[in-house]
Image (cartoon, rainbow, N blue to C red; front, top):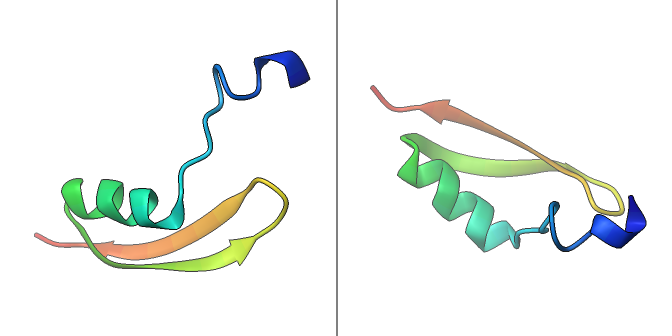
Length: 47
């Protein structure tokens, strides 16, 4: 698993995550949790 890190699992920066969420139709993404390599976000979808 460790040897595949960076190939199959590529960490994204908070800015990249925000851009992905906004592109997918979500607004005001907010990071609410972070551990070593995991982050959690909340947002609302714009309709």
